[in-house]
Length: 391
Image (cartoon, rainbow, N blue to C red):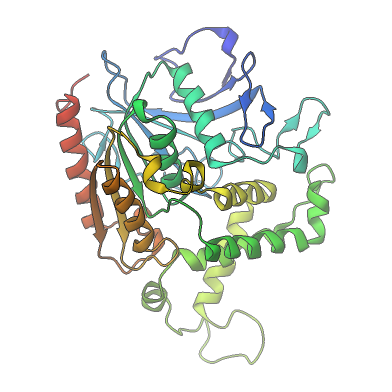
Protein backbone atom coordinates (compact mmCIF):
# COMPACT_ATOMS: atom_id res chain seq x y z
CA UNK A 1 0.00 0.00 0.00
CA UNK A 2 1.43 3.38 -1.02
CA UNK A 3 0.05 6.58 0.40
CA UNK A 4 0.68 9.99 -1.15
CA UNK A 5 0.92 13.18 0.93
CA UNK A 6 -2.24 14.46 -0.73
CA UNK A 7 -4.28 11.62 0.78
CA UNK A 8 -4.32 13.29 4.19
CA UNK A 9 -2.82 12.73 7.64
CA UNK A 10 -1.44 9.44 8.81
CA UNK A 11 -4.13 6.99 9.86
CA UNK A 12 -3.18 5.20 13.08
CA UNK A 13 -5.54 2.36 12.15
CA UNK A 14 -3.89 1.79 8.78
CA UNK A 15 -1.73 -1.30 8.16
CA UNK A 16 1.46 -1.36 10.18
CA UNK A 17 3.56 -1.95 7.09
CA UNK A 18 3.25 0.34 4.11
CA UNK A 19 5.00 3.00 2.08
CA UNK A 20 4.46 6.69 1.63
CA UNK A 21 5.47 9.18 -1.05
CA UNK A 22 7.16 12.23 0.49
CA UNK A 23 8.95 15.31 -0.78
CA UNK A 24 6.43 16.21 -3.47
CA UNK A 25 6.18 19.85 -2.40
CA UNK A 26 9.43 19.98 -0.40
CA UNK A 27 12.26 17.91 -1.91
CA UNK A 28 15.15 16.71 0.21
CA UNK A 29 18.27 18.85 0.00
CA UNK A 30 20.87 16.09 -0.18
CA UNK A 31 24.39 16.56 1.18
CA UNK A 32 25.62 16.49 -2.42
CA UNK A 33 23.56 19.65 -3.07
CA UNK A 34 20.94 17.89 -5.20
CA UNK A 35 17.24 18.55 -4.60
CA UNK A 36 15.61 15.10 -4.54
CA UNK A 37 11.91 14.38 -4.56
CA UNK A 38 9.37 13.02 -4.56
CA UNK A 39 10.68 9.87 -2.93
CA UNK A 40 9.10 6.76 -1.42
CA UNK A 41 9.77 5.46 2.08
CA UNK A 42 8.84 1.91 3.05
CA UNK A 43 8.37 1.35 6.77
CA UNK A 44 6.93 -0.76 9.55
CA UNK A 45 5.42 0.31 12.84
CA UNK A 46 4.77 -1.76 15.96
CA UNK A 47 2.65 -0.74 18.94
CA UNK A 48 0.78 2.54 19.25
CA UNK A 49 1.72 6.17 19.78
CA UNK A 50 0.49 7.30 23.20
CA UNK A 51 -1.69 10.35 23.79
CA UNK A 52 1.31 12.49 24.77
CA UNK A 53 3.23 11.30 21.68
CA UNK A 54 6.17 10.59 23.95
CA UNK A 55 6.81 6.86 23.48
CA UNK A 56 8.18 6.63 19.93
CA UNK A 57 11.37 4.66 19.28
CA UNK A 58 13.09 4.79 15.90
CA UNK A 59 14.98 1.60 15.03
CA UNK A 60 17.72 2.07 12.43
CA UNK A 61 18.86 -0.92 10.40
CA UNK A 62 22.35 -1.93 9.30
CA UNK A 63 23.86 -2.10 5.81
CA UNK A 64 22.08 -5.19 4.52
CA UNK A 65 19.13 -4.94 6.91
CA UNK A 66 15.63 -3.71 6.24
CA UNK A 67 12.50 -2.46 7.97
CA UNK A 68 11.20 -5.95 8.79
CA UNK A 69 12.40 -5.82 12.37
CA UNK A 70 9.99 -8.24 14.00
CA UNK A 71 7.97 -9.92 11.29
CA UNK A 72 8.77 -12.31 8.48
CA UNK A 73 10.74 -10.85 5.59
CA UNK A 74 8.61 -11.28 2.45
CA UNK A 75 11.67 -11.89 0.25
CA UNK A 76 13.86 -14.18 2.37
CA UNK A 77 11.03 -15.71 4.41
CA UNK A 78 13.16 -15.35 7.54
CA UNK A 79 11.99 -13.89 10.88
CA UNK A 80 12.66 -10.22 11.61
CA UNK A 81 16.27 -9.39 12.42
CA UNK A 82 15.43 -8.21 15.95
CA UNK A 83 12.50 -10.54 16.46
CA UNK A 84 13.84 -11.56 19.88
CA UNK A 85 13.82 -7.97 21.11
CA UNK A 86 10.58 -6.58 19.67
CA UNK A 87 7.10 -7.57 20.84
CA UNK A 88 4.69 -7.52 23.78
CA UNK A 89 6.62 -7.75 27.04
CA UNK A 90 9.99 -7.89 25.28
CA UNK A 91 12.80 -5.35 25.70
CA UNK A 92 11.38 -3.19 22.91
CA UNK A 93 7.90 -3.63 24.33
CA UNK A 94 5.14 -3.01 21.81
CA UNK A 95 2.66 -2.65 24.67
CA UNK A 96 4.71 0.27 25.93
CA UNK A 97 6.45 1.85 22.95
CA UNK A 98 5.59 2.90 19.42
CA UNK A 99 8.34 1.43 17.26
CA UNK A 100 9.19 2.70 13.79
CA UNK A 101 11.67 1.33 11.28
CA UNK A 102 12.08 2.40 7.66
CA UNK A 103 14.13 1.05 4.79
CA UNK A 104 16.94 3.57 4.23
CA UNK A 105 17.10 5.96 1.29
CA UNK A 106 19.08 4.23 -1.45
CA UNK A 107 17.81 0.83 -0.29
CA UNK A 108 16.12 -1.91 -2.26
CA UNK A 109 13.21 -2.97 -0.06
CA UNK A 110 10.66 -0.32 -0.99
CA UNK A 111 12.37 3.00 -0.25
CA UNK A 112 13.61 4.92 -3.29
CA UNK A 113 16.90 3.57 -4.57
CA UNK A 114 18.85 2.91 -7.75
CA UNK A 115 16.71 -0.07 -8.79
CA UNK A 116 13.54 2.04 -8.89
CA UNK A 117 12.16 3.86 -11.90
CA UNK A 118 13.39 7.37 -12.64
CA UNK A 119 10.16 9.22 -13.51
CA UNK A 120 12.00 11.42 -15.99
CA UNK A 121 13.27 8.50 -18.09
CA UNK A 122 10.84 5.69 -17.32
CA UNK A 123 13.85 3.42 -16.71
CA UNK A 124 15.63 2.23 -13.54
CA UNK A 125 17.78 4.94 -11.99
CA UNK A 126 20.94 2.85 -11.95
CA UNK A 127 23.98 5.09 -11.48
CA UNK A 128 21.93 8.19 -12.27
CA UNK A 129 20.47 7.89 -8.75
CA UNK A 130 22.05 10.63 -6.61
CA UNK A 131 24.83 9.59 -4.23
CA UNK A 132 23.42 9.62 -0.72
CA UNK A 133 24.88 9.92 2.78
CA UNK A 134 23.92 8.78 6.27
CA UNK A 135 22.66 12.34 6.79
CA UNK A 136 20.38 12.00 3.78
CA UNK A 137 18.98 8.75 5.19
CA UNK A 138 18.24 10.53 8.47
CA UNK A 139 16.60 13.45 6.66
CA UNK A 140 14.24 11.00 4.95
CA UNK A 141 13.44 9.39 8.31
CA UNK A 142 12.70 12.82 9.78
CA UNK A 143 10.21 13.44 6.96
CA UNK A 144 8.57 10.09 7.71
CA UNK A 145 8.19 11.04 11.38
CA UNK A 146 6.51 14.30 10.33
CA UNK A 147 4.06 12.28 8.27
CA UNK A 148 3.41 9.88 11.14
CA UNK A 149 2.71 12.79 13.49
CA UNK A 150 5.67 12.03 15.78
CA UNK A 151 7.09 15.34 17.10
CA UNK A 152 10.14 13.82 18.80
CA UNK A 153 11.62 10.49 19.80
CA UNK A 154 11.91 8.80 23.16
CA UNK A 155 14.82 6.81 21.72
CA UNK A 156 16.82 6.16 18.56
CA UNK A 157 18.57 2.80 18.47
CA UNK A 158 20.63 0.87 15.95
CA UNK A 159 23.79 -1.13 15.36
CA UNK A 160 26.61 -0.77 12.82
CA UNK A 161 25.31 1.51 10.04
CA UNK A 162 22.20 1.83 12.20
CA UNK A 163 24.45 3.22 14.94
CA UNK A 164 25.78 5.81 12.50
CA UNK A 165 22.20 6.91 11.90
CA UNK A 166 21.68 7.12 15.67
CA UNK A 167 24.69 9.44 16.02
CA UNK A 168 23.51 11.56 13.12
CA UNK A 169 20.06 11.87 14.66
CA UNK A 170 21.54 12.91 18.01
CA UNK A 171 23.74 15.58 16.42
CA UNK A 172 21.45 16.86 13.66
CA UNK A 173 18.22 16.84 15.69
CA UNK A 174 19.35 17.03 19.34
CA UNK A 175 16.08 18.57 20.54
CA UNK A 176 14.09 15.70 19.07
CA UNK A 177 16.04 12.82 20.65
CA UNK A 178 15.50 12.06 24.34
CA UNK A 179 17.81 9.04 24.37
CA UNK A 180 20.17 7.37 21.93
CA UNK A 181 21.69 3.89 21.79
CA UNK A 182 24.50 3.59 19.21
CA UNK A 183 25.67 -0.03 19.09
CA UNK A 184 28.86 -1.49 17.56
CA UNK A 185 29.51 1.62 15.50
CA UNK A 186 31.84 4.58 15.00
CA UNK A 187 31.73 8.34 14.55
CA UNK A 188 33.54 7.92 11.25
CA UNK A 189 34.33 5.05 8.92
CA UNK A 190 37.89 3.81 9.27
CA UNK A 191 40.37 3.38 6.41
CA UNK A 192 40.23 -0.39 6.96
CA UNK A 193 36.46 -0.47 6.61
CA UNK A 194 36.54 1.76 3.52
CA UNK A 195 39.05 -0.70 2.07
CA UNK A 196 36.79 -3.68 2.72
CA UNK A 197 33.91 -1.85 1.08
CA UNK A 198 36.01 -1.02 -1.95
CA UNK A 199 36.88 -4.69 -2.44
CA UNK A 200 33.17 -5.49 -2.46
CA UNK A 201 32.33 -2.68 -4.85
CA UNK A 202 35.08 -3.68 -7.25
CA UNK A 203 33.85 -7.28 -7.23
CA UNK A 204 30.44 -6.01 -8.35
CA UNK A 205 31.82 -3.59 -10.93
CA UNK A 206 34.12 -6.29 -12.39
CA UNK A 207 31.16 -8.60 -13.04
CA UNK A 208 30.40 -8.41 -16.81
CA UNK A 209 26.68 -8.53 -15.98
CA UNK A 210 26.93 -5.26 -14.05
CA UNK A 211 26.78 -3.50 -17.44
CA UNK A 212 28.07 -0.19 -16.14
CA UNK A 213 25.26 -0.16 -13.57
CA UNK A 214 22.55 -0.58 -16.24
CA UNK A 215 21.97 -4.31 -15.66
CA UNK A 216 18.25 -4.04 -14.84
CA UNK A 217 17.45 -2.34 -18.12
CA UNK A 218 19.38 -5.08 -19.88
CA UNK A 219 17.68 -7.90 -17.99
CA UNK A 220 20.81 -9.04 -16.20
CA UNK A 221 22.06 -9.34 -12.61
CA UNK A 222 25.72 -9.17 -11.49
CA UNK A 223 25.15 -12.18 -9.26
CA UNK A 224 28.75 -13.38 -9.11
CA UNK A 225 30.18 -10.00 -8.15
CA UNK A 226 27.50 -9.30 -5.55
CA UNK A 227 27.96 -12.76 -4.04
CA UNK A 228 31.70 -12.22 -3.68
CA UNK A 229 31.07 -8.80 -2.10
CA UNK A 230 28.77 -10.41 0.43
CA UNK A 231 31.24 -13.20 1.18
CA UNK A 232 34.04 -10.74 1.86
CA UNK A 233 31.82 -8.56 4.05
CA UNK A 234 30.40 -11.50 5.99
CA UNK A 235 33.88 -12.53 7.11
CA UNK A 236 34.23 -9.13 8.80
CA UNK A 237 30.99 -9.62 10.72
CA UNK A 238 32.35 -12.69 12.53
CA UNK A 239 35.25 -13.23 14.90
CA UNK A 240 38.04 -15.78 14.51
CA UNK A 241 36.78 -17.53 17.64
CA UNK A 242 33.23 -17.72 16.30
CA UNK A 243 34.41 -19.08 12.95
CA UNK A 244 36.63 -21.66 14.64
CA UNK A 245 33.83 -22.76 16.98
CA UNK A 246 31.34 -23.05 14.14
CA UNK A 247 33.54 -24.54 11.41
CA UNK A 248 37.13 -25.17 12.48
CA UNK A 249 38.79 -27.03 9.60
CA UNK A 250 35.87 -29.42 9.23
CA UNK A 251 35.32 -30.82 5.76
CA UNK A 252 32.03 -30.40 3.91
CA UNK A 253 30.28 -33.73 3.24
CA UNK A 254 33.51 -35.62 2.59
CA UNK A 255 36.13 -37.59 4.49
CA UNK A 256 39.20 -36.17 2.76
CA UNK A 257 40.24 -33.21 0.66
CA UNK A 258 39.67 -33.39 -3.12
CA UNK A 259 42.87 -31.63 -4.17
CA UNK A 260 40.71 -29.26 -6.21
CA UNK A 261 38.72 -26.07 -5.88
CA UNK A 262 35.32 -27.33 -4.79
CA UNK A 263 34.15 -26.35 -1.32
CA UNK A 264 36.23 -28.83 0.63
CA UNK A 265 35.76 -26.99 3.94
CA UNK A 266 32.53 -26.19 5.75
CA UNK A 267 33.49 -22.53 6.02
CA UNK A 268 33.82 -22.33 2.22
CA UNK A 269 30.38 -23.85 1.73
CA UNK A 270 28.91 -21.47 4.31
CA UNK A 271 30.34 -18.40 2.59
CA UNK A 272 29.13 -19.57 -0.81
CA UNK A 273 25.65 -20.01 0.63
CA UNK A 274 25.76 -16.54 2.19
CA UNK A 275 26.77 -15.07 -1.16
CA UNK A 276 24.17 -16.86 -3.27
CA UNK A 277 21.27 -16.21 -0.88
CA UNK A 278 22.19 -12.53 -0.60
CA UNK A 279 21.84 -12.09 -4.36
CA UNK A 280 18.19 -13.15 -4.08
CA UNK A 281 17.30 -10.32 -1.70
CA UNK A 282 19.61 -7.39 -2.39
CA UNK A 283 20.28 -5.05 -5.29
CA UNK A 284 23.89 -4.67 -6.45
CA UNK A 285 23.71 -0.92 -7.07
CA UNK A 286 22.11 -0.39 -3.67
CA UNK A 287 25.13 -2.16 -2.21
CA UNK A 288 27.40 0.34 -3.97
CA UNK A 289 25.39 3.34 -2.78
CA UNK A 290 24.92 2.29 0.83
CA UNK A 291 28.54 1.25 1.37
CA UNK A 292 29.60 4.61 -0.08
CA UNK A 293 27.27 6.40 2.34
CA UNK A 294 29.02 4.64 5.23
CA UNK A 295 32.44 5.56 3.82
CA UNK A 296 31.52 9.25 3.75
CA UNK A 297 30.32 9.24 7.36
CA UNK A 298 32.45 11.46 9.62
CA UNK A 299 30.67 13.35 12.40
CA UNK A 300 33.80 15.24 13.52
CA UNK A 301 34.47 16.55 10.01
CA UNK A 302 31.09 18.26 10.15
CA UNK A 303 32.13 20.08 13.35
CA UNK A 304 35.55 21.58 12.64
CA UNK A 305 37.25 18.23 13.11
CA UNK A 306 36.37 18.08 16.83
CA UNK A 307 33.96 15.28 17.72
CA UNK A 308 33.03 16.81 21.07
CA UNK A 309 31.67 19.85 19.23
CA UNK A 310 29.02 17.64 17.68
CA UNK A 311 27.54 16.98 21.13
CA UNK A 312 27.85 20.48 22.59
CA UNK A 313 24.94 21.33 24.94
CA UNK A 314 23.19 18.05 24.15
CA UNK A 315 20.44 16.95 26.53
CA UNK A 316 20.16 13.49 24.98
CA UNK A 317 20.86 10.53 27.25
CA UNK A 318 23.32 8.12 25.60
CA UNK A 319 24.10 4.45 26.03
CA UNK A 320 27.09 3.41 23.90
CA UNK A 321 27.62 -0.34 23.48
CA UNK A 322 30.51 -2.31 21.96
CA UNK A 323 31.58 -5.96 21.87
CA UNK A 324 34.99 -7.32 22.85
CA UNK A 325 35.47 -9.45 19.71
CA UNK A 326 34.20 -6.90 17.19
CA UNK A 327 37.19 -6.06 15.00
CA UNK A 328 35.10 -4.31 12.32
CA UNK A 329 33.93 -1.62 14.77
CA UNK A 330 36.26 -2.22 17.72
CA UNK A 331 35.67 -0.91 21.22
CA UNK A 332 38.23 1.86 20.62
CA UNK A 333 35.75 3.45 18.20
CA UNK A 334 33.03 3.45 20.85
CA UNK A 335 35.44 4.84 23.44
CA UNK A 336 36.19 7.76 21.12
CA UNK A 337 32.46 8.55 21.05
CA UNK A 338 32.25 8.27 24.84
CA UNK A 339 35.28 10.52 25.36
CA UNK A 340 33.71 13.15 23.09
CA UNK A 341 30.43 12.91 24.99
CA UNK A 342 32.28 13.26 28.29
CA UNK A 343 34.12 16.30 26.95
CA UNK A 344 30.74 17.81 26.12
CA UNK A 345 29.46 16.98 29.63
CA UNK A 346 26.78 14.74 28.15
CA UNK A 347 24.79 12.10 30.02
CA UNK A 348 26.42 8.90 28.81
CA UNK A 349 26.69 5.27 29.85
CA UNK A 350 29.17 2.92 28.21
CA UNK A 351 29.26 -0.88 28.22
CA UNK A 352 31.71 -3.19 26.49
CA UNK A 353 29.93 -6.53 26.28
CA UNK A 354 32.06 -9.65 26.63
CA UNK A 355 31.31 -11.75 23.55
CA UNK A 356 33.22 -13.93 21.09
CA UNK A 357 30.55 -13.55 18.37
CA UNK A 358 32.15 -10.61 16.58
CA UNK A 359 30.39 -7.64 15.03
CA UNK A 360 27.17 -9.58 14.48
CA UNK A 361 26.73 -10.01 18.25
CA UNK A 362 24.14 -7.21 18.30
CA UNK A 363 21.91 -9.36 16.06
CA UNK A 364 22.34 -12.56 18.08
CA UNK A 365 21.20 -13.97 21.40
CA UNK A 366 23.59 -12.18 23.76
CA UNK A 367 22.11 -12.02 27.29
CA UNK A 368 24.47 -9.36 28.66
CA UNK A 369 23.74 -7.09 25.71
CA UNK A 370 20.01 -7.59 26.16
CA UNK A 371 20.32 -6.85 29.86
CA UNK A 372 22.11 -3.58 29.15
CA UNK A 373 19.37 -2.52 26.72
CA UNK A 374 16.63 -3.40 29.19
CA UNK A 375 18.28 -1.52 32.04
CA UNK A 376 19.01 1.63 30.08
CA UNK A 377 15.55 1.80 28.49
CA UNK A 378 13.88 1.31 31.87
CA UNK A 379 15.86 4.17 33.41
CA UNK A 380 15.25 6.45 30.43
CA UNK A 381 11.53 5.59 30.45
CA UNK A 382 11.29 6.60 34.10
CA UNK A 383 12.88 9.97 33.35
CA UNK A 384 10.55 10.39 30.37
CA UNK A 385 7.51 9.60 32.52
CA UNK A 386 6.61 6.42 30.64
CA UNK A 387 5.02 3.98 33.03
CA UNK A 388 4.81 0.30 32.15
CA UNK A 389 2.03 -0.34 29.66
CA UNK A 390 1.20 3.37 29.53
CA UNK A 391 -0.59 4.48 26.38
